[in-house]
Every structure is written in C-alpha cells, then in structure tokens.
Image 1 (cartoon, rainbow, N blue to C red):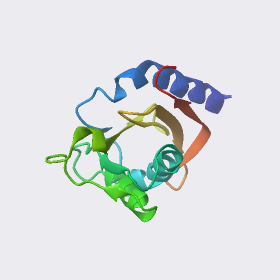
Image 2: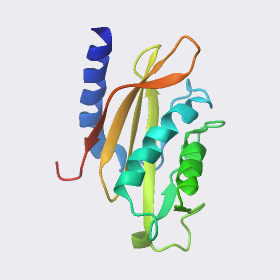
Image 3: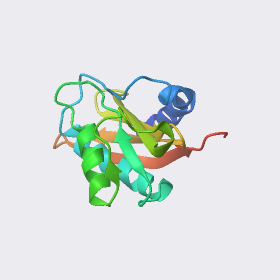
Image 4: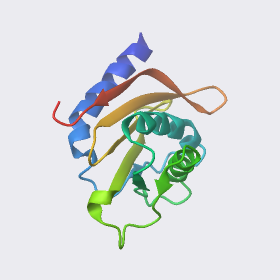
Length: 151
C-alpha cells in the first residue's frame, strides 16, 4: 500500500514539475545521492531515449548537474554511446537544431525512495520511482510515467 502511494506521489510530482524540467539551466542531482545511484537510473533513461530518438542523425548532449562525484550524466552518456549515439561533450560551436539536450533530476522522496525525472527539450519527459533496497542499491519500482509535449 505504501509503495502504491509513493508511485502516485511520484506521478503527481512528475506532472507538476515536468513542464519546468527543460527550463532548468542544467540537470540536478540532490546532494544526498551517491555516485553509484546513477548506475541504477541511467539504464531507465537510456532505454526510453533509445525508443524516442533515431540513432544515426542524433547528436546528444547530456546536461551536467554540476554535483561533484555524481555519476548519472556519465552513465547516461556511456549507455547512449554504447547504443551508437554520438555524444557531444560541449555545446559551443554546435548548431542548436542539430543537438538533442537531455536533462535529468534525481532527488529523494523519502529515506528509501527516489524520483528520477528526465527528458529532452525537443521531446517529452518521463519519470521513474526508484527504491533503495537493503543492499543500498536503487531499483525501479512502479511504471515508467511518460508525458509527451502538448499533453
């Protein structure tokens, strides 16, 4: 019952915050997150982006969060690179219309539950609730919630 309530809280937060996700100047990772937390969230992001973006012509820039030691952005970029995407390491000198910016936010809902929100400036946004297991690792729980632009 508590898990279901947390999923609905996560969905509510996603719905209220997704409109502003791509307006932020950079991605965000809460200071309470561990660098290894990115390893749990990145596959969710990579799998969704692989369905949304064509591999060949897409140049992806994963917006950094600026948090020291966070591994989310690097794990997303590495996962996309492994699937054949071209990854930009900077935006200078790249035409804006040729670049797909990916932003993410990883923040706690409570001591054991984390909300991962992510999306692109040109596409939609998605959210996944993750729960910290007894071993300390985050695992996805509940459905991936997706919101397309204009919905």
